[in-house]
Image (cartoon, rainbow, N blue to C red):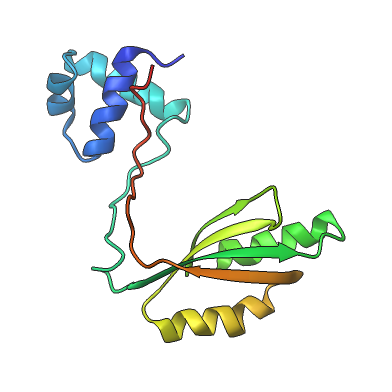
Length: 154
């Protein structure tokens, strides 16, 4: 059970994951020891999965983004497993979700150029096991992107 105090900790850490514990305790109106204990508990139960630097893709040189919808031959569960392994191992694929509907998976892909993305779609994707069909949707403009969950929703 996540308490309101836990939600405050999570909200503040999503804004700044490098916040010192003394500052986090102050901003959440807790003692430092209570805040540390609650934060460690959130880590242990897996609500906090880890801490990372969030990069701006474009500033880091990845100026092209696309979503690729993929259908695979669903002959066996092994086909799904082979596809998932190939996805996990490819560095340009940022996210991949199994879906209901006309496509089996949706991948978020980044690239440094249109040429690199084109190579991924036309050459690399064809080497992935069991792909039957793929449709690429190029991102023209990112309207919203966040990693922060709305922990304060009622």
